[in-house]
Image (cartoon, rainbow, N blue to C red; front, top):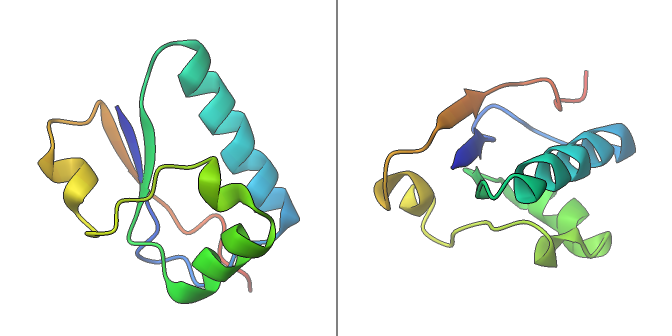
Length: 83
């Protein structure tokens, strides 16, 4: 399982969405679960508008993904943050 923690991400743009889609495809093709946690309301709005909210698993309870087992990796990044 790969869990991407969005706790420090304020906003995401088209390039960031593309990277997320690539990561999701990469993990899915290898049978690895890919989840997003700590997604704020602005990022959630972008995912909803782009209809990608159905592509990514985003637990309603923010830390539910990590609580359901030991993830292979938790990526804490701000690379999707707008300057």
